[in-house]
Amino acid sequence: MELAYIPSPSRGVIHLGPIPLRGYAFCIIIGVFVAVWLGNKRWIARGGRAGTVADIAVWAVPFGLVGGRLYHVITDYELYFSEGRDWVDAFKIWEGGLGIWGAIALGAVGAWIGCRRRGIPLPAYADAIAPGIALAQAIGRWGNWFNQELYGRRTDLPWALEITSSTDGRVPGTYHPTFLYESLWCIGVALLVIWADRRFKLGHGRAFALYVAAYCAGRAWIEYMRVDDAHHILGLRLNVWTAIIVFLLAVTYLVLSAKKRPGREEVVEPGASASGGEAEGASEASDEDPAAEGDDQAEADAKDDVKDEAGSTKKT
Image (tube, rainbow, N blue to C red):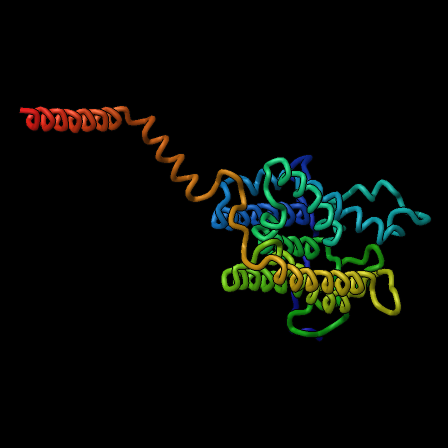
């Protein structure tokens, strides 16, 4: 008999009149706002302009959502295209089902488009938003809690997750809360990237690569605990293999980039450097204070008068 457990919500949607308010969607939206907020602070600290992160996110977020959904539908196609299934459900993103691998891959394409339009290097932008993405994932994982999905093996630990739904093959009981494990892991990844970035001045995409490597290390063992249906290759779940491969690629990039381009980018956004800002501020002060300009001219005229008088004295 379980003495303690994490209860699951009785339902993941609340209707405000005809409008459904879904917990999964709220978690995704809150995560995006947190990522943009933190990314903006880090971007400004690196010498960029306020608002640039949000402008580029307008491209990155929709691409990321589409990429995440595509990855999920492709790797779990039988949920939508097998006998007895309705393929229209593949478009119901609010019911859950986003693959982080597809979200990052296609989201990077959207970010590249946004960066290119503003003349910004994508690696610098990726470094700024890396810990924010990890926090967005930490928040987004609670959407799985609302949907009672993606849990682990049975357990009677005090922090076990109680599953009450019996739809889609679920068996009520208490299970490892893998959504919570991943949420906490992502918070740790965000803190790791922030610390390492301050300590080692990571640049040229290395902070982002560190985020990817650290996330994959945790995702591999968390994925191994899950009991939901998944494709297996050589006895391991597909996402475990994906995590291993992406981890190796991220570490390789970290090592090669550190050797080839150590340090950070000197300029991350054209026209937004500290010296440029001072010059613009001085120009604006001059335009807005005609009295000061007049005082400068009077001082110059006074100096000329002194010089003329001195010259006349010498001639005499």
